[in-house]
Length: 327
Image (cartoon, rainbow, N blue to C red; front, side, top):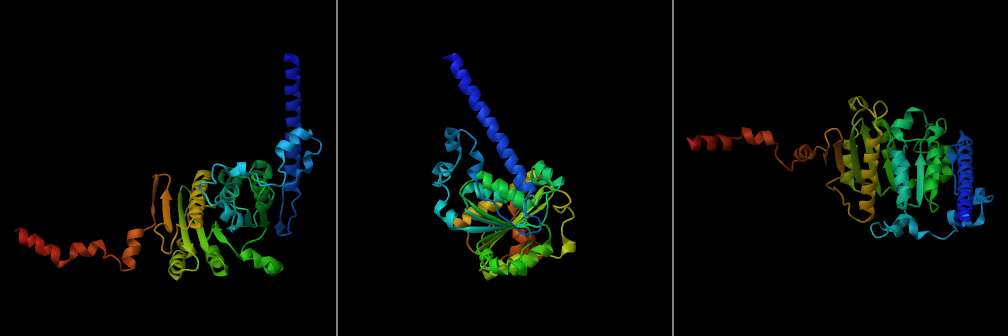
């Protein structure tokens, strides 16, 4: 019996090794043979590569077309899965922040995700953005789509090797891709301003910004005039941007942290917890100082006239009278 068991174990390991080799080959082919310059990349889970593997083993690994509830068994009581199945999100820019947003929303159960980015993976993106070294040279869109599809068999993911908004070549599909929440994960303020003007049918905009070990997350309800006006006030001139732009100095853990907060904000909105002028519509943090706080909240209140500046209180006549009365 011992010898027979050992042979079964050896056979199983051999089958698993065959499967791993086939998957590695499939991944390399999918990424390296991506349709460069086409502006459109879409990959869907294809179980045909398991044809030469033992049937019993394949049955355990391939989705049979029915929803696998076991994937979401630990989150189904926390998140509104039915809403996630029908919502579409757009991720504009898939660098250090956007890549992590894509992986997180795919794993969380968002079924429809559209990616926009025209960059290719470089070696520096391995340490700062988490792209696999084997993906260097491939478009970020094709790389991220592949790895999102690896995570879940349930998603309908689409990517454009192009910036947003799409050009005339996509005008037939553009209306479809103008709907749903928008995660804005680009580098430059001028790009944000251009995208903000082009967005339509956007219920919520979540903007993540990074500089080395600091981050800022701005969340607005797009149809609210006050929220829109506030967001426009954050679009300062490019020359005023912090010197440590994310394209110059970046850390992978800071990008991951920003992405986590952005996805958490999206989940708050899905559950109806975000209202116009939300207390946390603008947050800033420093991982070096280990501090997270609403961005310049006291100053904003002073500028809006809701609270008198603190300096004015110290200069007022009332404080002088108190001093004289003590004498």
